[in-house]
Image (cartoon, rainbow, N blue to C red; front, side):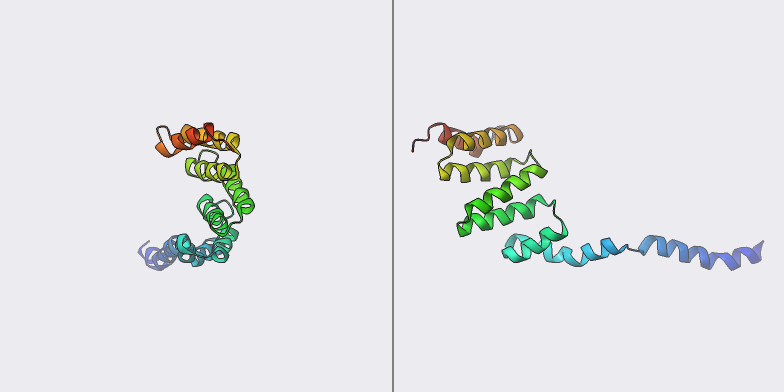
Length: 141
């Protein structure tokens, strides 16, 4: 019995080692991109789009791309990105607020009010959401 134990313990250690430290191809690809995408907040839009390719359901990256579009004046693209983010997470109050502000700036007070109310649903008591709803309710072109 002792001879069997002496012969098999190195094999057992190898199995434990491989089971603990082995990575799949998908995980290692994501790990290589992770440091690159974790700093996405300060990244340019091209980098954010690369990160989005790696994780197409990342609401934060989608929202940041929308923010870049707002800053560059491409509000149609920004709206598309915000709506895409909301299709993934319809309860994200921050994205509802961003979309509401964008819509109000365009003069669509009714839609902005709807977004403000949606933000209040997920962020009860939010002063920013309340102000958006009030501004949209009082909006005159």
